[in-house]
Image (cartoon, rainbow, N blue to C red; front, side, top):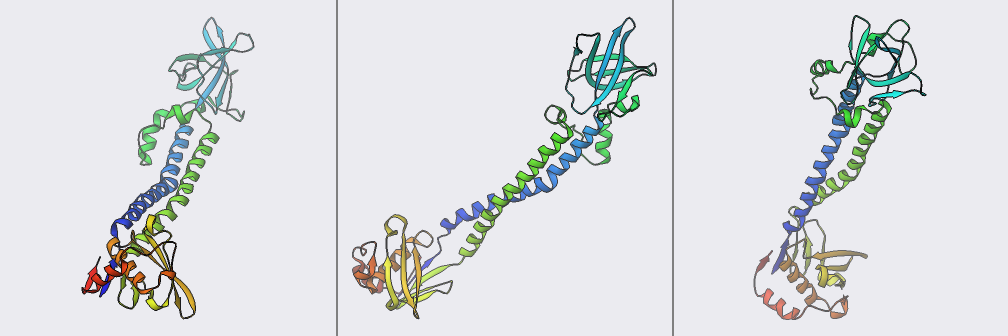
Length: 308
């Protein structure tokens, strides 16, 4: 009679779960690396371009505060008033929110403190590279973000100033360069694991092995006769349910694995009993013959077909 062991679907279920997780993570990281993070960087740099921080060096006088120099700076976030070398000059760092027709500018710092400064023809106005610019070029334009966002179909929410926009443009680019590269590192790890697990799962479907009175055959085409068996290695049978059969195939030595985790356990156990009943004890290495193997085989032989 024939003993057929079908694949143990529970064993291979773990592979499809690993595949789903890893392949899902692969596409997530791929989207972040190709679409999400580059788009975020574009929005942040545009917002950064609208946002202008200035350092106003000024002198207090009877009429108010007169700006000696207005510098557009790369890094914002300064606050309050600071003296310069114990002279009458002080500095204020913030964003120019209003330019008045009467020669005044209103500047708001990082803590929402407002100061008003007078400027005139003697006031030096420069960009981060030290080039002279007009007073209009110092105006902070973050209030126009909603219009810009709608024109580009971007989210209206402003980028997080506290985490990103107080950094330099170079800092922001380096940060996102690292974030994008890290996505591809994760892709390099997740993709092989995920697709290999999927390949193992799909390859296991419909697999079986079967023993008849003369030998063993399998769904993947490997087959041999009991008379050609050289050894039966049972070193891992007790702990892992794995037995390795070495057999002669037209002058070439080949191996066949019995695994009662990957295939129906009881059917594989019965196939092992049949193998042991067809070979000598001297051919069994790494373990002893199964108890009552010969007697159980005789019981099996009394039926017709056993399927697992």
